[in-house]
Image (cartoon, rainbow, N blue to C red; front, side):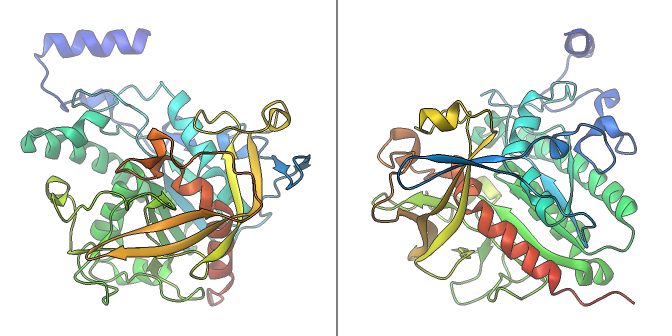
Length: 373
């Protein structure tokens, strides 16, 4: 509260405009306080209990422990999605307010410690209202504050990991930030590009010139992944429930200048129409109807094995990853629910459906990185 009050007083005194936060709010990524997860920080989100309660087909449950990699061969840079849902344009400059970022990283990036060391920065992200603003000057200014923080965090990440191979990923606004890290830092640098294991800009409309092209549009040098063992490529998709329309077509409004390309990418973490092996849902997620035994287990996640299918579907230049329910499975969600059937699809659960398979895929790609000399 004291920090928020000081920021408000400073803003009033300077007749602040949206997204011109005081310089003192800029995070110092050399310090642990600027990170939600950073190897070596005692008790950070990625070091918490990440066990899951598995929900069986018969409704019974069993606790499944999380086993982090002991000596990970790669590092993962993870950027969390929008947690500041204010409808007025601005940036979330009070980084002492950590509850939302910690919950987002816990639900998404933290489990990747199974295959890599996870580094997740706090950043002065754009509020939800920035994405809906029609004031292009304000939008650009807000996004540049957030992007500037994430780029500075990435520089520190590179300093922290030495010459390790790395993964860059994020969801929603975090994926928006991820694309800028790749475009501004990785693609112009041959040495960094050679160290990129895979990019995971999940839940963001990555574009290509056409459905037949894997590069161009959002990325000039990082292609869409075509094979499980391919390195230096990008996995990108937006999910939606079977029986519902595709997520909104960003080519119709270009996301007010944010969408680059003509065709929306969809890369499937499993074979087309295949079964997603491990879906992890936070047991506190309000969009879900989990069994009481799962909610009362004390575990932070509910695990559903082989419960959902995934298939990339396309209509003209638009696409989405269609999520279906395996016959005989009682799913913990209703795809006809208003929050899951609109033009955002199942955006809030993009990572949850595919999390286990993305972790396995990242682990497979890391294992395929040639040994460093």
